[in-house]
Amino acid sequence: MVMLSSPMPAMDHLEPLLAAIWIQIEEVAKSIKEIDGQTYFIEQPDMLDENGKIRDDVAENAIAIEGTKEDFIKNCTEKHIRRLIRDKENLSENESDSMPRDLEIKIPLHLKQLVTKTLLVKWIDSAIYAKYRCEHNKHYILKKGKVAPVDANNTGIVQQNMHWSNGLHQFLQIKHGAKITPESLSTNFISNVTYFKRYRQNIYGLTGTLGSISARQLLNRTYSVDSVIIPPFRQKQYRELTPIIMHTESRDWYNNIVESCINKLENGRGVLVIMKFIQEVDELKNQLKTAGYSESKIKVYKTEEDSTVIDEDLKPGEIIIATNIAGRGTDIKANKIEQNGGLHVCVTFLPPNERVEQQNVGRTSRTGNKGTSQFILLEKKEFEFNVLRQERNRAEEEEIMKAESKIKKVTISDAIFAKFCELLNEINDDVDLTTKYTCRAVEERFGIWLKMQEDKILTATSEEKLLDDFKVFRKEILDDKEN
Image (cartoon, rainbow, N blue to C red):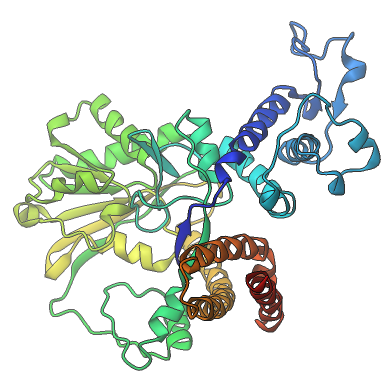
């Protein structure tokens, strides 16, 4: 879905709330210790003795945590923050009585309901995700002090103009000490589905990797289009080598990749290694250098800024280490290595779907040239490669079913937005000096209202109820305009 976010007045006043959430999570996390398989919360420094056991004098204050550590942190943080913002509606009588009198975070009145009913829980979840799961040079990079998401699973592209929602972007900024940008709310959007459907019977496309049969069937059902496979004009001279699956440490995995690549390179071939994450690209480069391979023959392709590495012909003995950014539509010139067996592609992870897999291995043996590919995986599950691939395909089938359901949800959002555009047109019919500011105020209120409907949209089975809710919102806007 293409969404345009608008700056919301006073959203910058919520920055102290974001900071308070992060600080509270950090403080609670400091007091959590895991001992002999049991997790405890002990609100006291130096709680452990020299043997790593809880000191006898603080043992009675140790609280055994039931459930996960993250759930405990979330519950503690939510209660604390609701006290700070004086959210009496969502606190028990005892919790309300224990509010800190000298500490309060003021919330702008027009944002109070948005914060207490919608944003707070989402923000706490995002803060925990940012702290424990979202990793630098895996899921995002830092570029000139700014957080930029990376589409590691599909294209490998650094999405410099994209901001994560629900506070995740802001918490990553806090995590790295970057400047905080206020969260914005979406007021203009259209889904790809609704956009393409406007072309009706005039939808055409050409791709080398349309994906699995199920993916094609989804396109057929959604857009009423057929798909035709056109055979290549030259026969491929391609061979897939036996996959290598490591179940041990990452060090052994890297060693296998290095050994396999150097073997091909010493025979005068060129190699493309596709890693999942940027940090793995850097690590493999270091491993190759440690193994004594010449740094002048190692090329790195991590972001769009590195795209010049594929401008020239790949020479015998040269290796390109890349992410998925080199897997879609990248044409690696292999003329100088053709006589030595062509380009070898080493894929170091199992792509999330058949389409991305085809894109990755499809970098070699193009236009009838020679080429090979091989998977070298690090997998906890001790399965054969074909079993892993079948398991991946089943997961892809489930994702396609979810995608079909998601398509219905986004079309509901599109229907609501269409009604909102009608409302704006109705207001714009009045030629008045204040019309411009009135429309802007209505857009702001729509952004808040839509954010508060987010969970309803995700669970909706039809658009009728949500359109009825929008009618109530519309009436409130028109009544306020008249008054």
